[in-house]
Image 1 (spheres, rainbow, N blue to C red):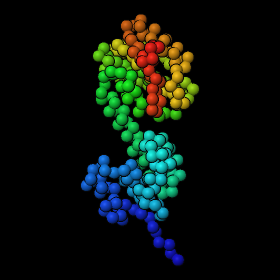
Image 2 (cartoon, rainbow, N blue to C red):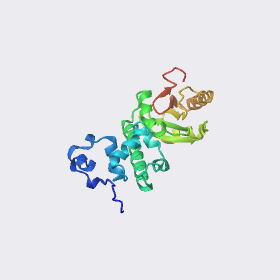
Image 3 (tube, one colour):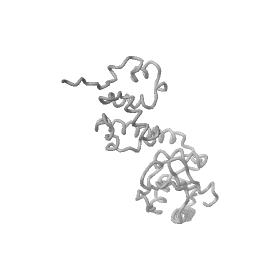
Image 4 (cartoon, rainbow, N blue to C red):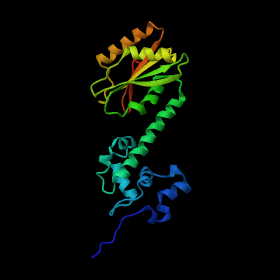
Length: 232
């Protein structure tokens, strides 16, 4: 007996249930996360509609979009109905969202507090599984001139080249520096190495009349500020 396909393509749903049409007529804010992801994948599998499949995928990460963005293409392909093309589409869309957050933070440009540094850098390094060390270069109005990745290392630490930091600072005319690195472990306690490199950079920068204004340790949801804690 020939088995009848029960694949639920979006185009075969009633108009009220079609996410594309819902977005068009009701606006993007009217859609749930599952409906938005369903638009990306277009169809589900023989047992589930695209929305039902996306609800299951989201449930696997406790409905957390940041956690969804961390899933690899291979991990997404573990769900029935998600092939390589659909997995790549989901990964690409979430990466665009992450980059947009970073650009929106950079548009503010002026650093007014440790929180503004966190908002600038969390989308960049907060969710990484390895450690990265970044330098934010500021002018005398505390406006961001640029931010550079200084080093990228394993989960246990990074190497920091003080000479390169100061060379770049002079080239761009920076009068202030903010250091930032992530702790993939999630701990916010600074290590002795964190403290030593902070003091080393601070001392070297002072000889050039450049101030190290802060050093932030950043995790996915929180941060530690050397300046706020009075240990800079």
